[in-house]
Image 1 (cartoon, rainbow, N blue to C red):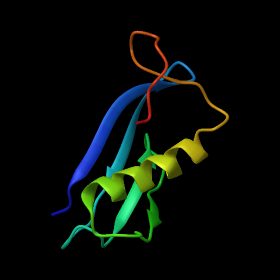
Image 2 (image 1 turned 135 degrees about the vertical axis):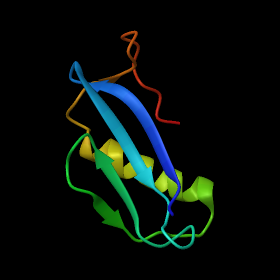
Image 3 (image 1 turned 30 degrees about the vertical axis):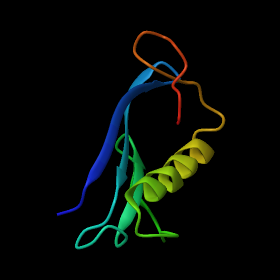
Image 4 (image 1 turned 180 degrees about the horizontal axis):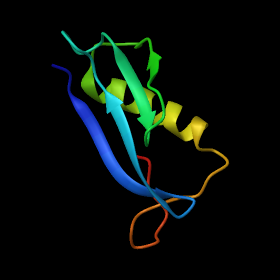
Amino acid sequence: MGIRWIRNVLVDGEETTLEIQLGYRHMGDKCYVRIGNELEHYFDTASENRDEIVLQGLHILQDKLQNSVVTNHDGSLYEWQ
């Protein structure tokens, strides 16, 4: 079973879940990002290191959300790192 990195945020004022899956059988296989209920966006990892895979997934999520405002529930801007 894969490891999931999950954050609940607001995207343009709408409650949304950001998700990164870090592998299925081992850390670097079947990795994907997902925003809310969208389809998974699978990506090839540059390493087997957990932190590096999360960082890679964060960059993909940031790119996908570059035209959106991502905030915490208190209204403060979400810090990606």
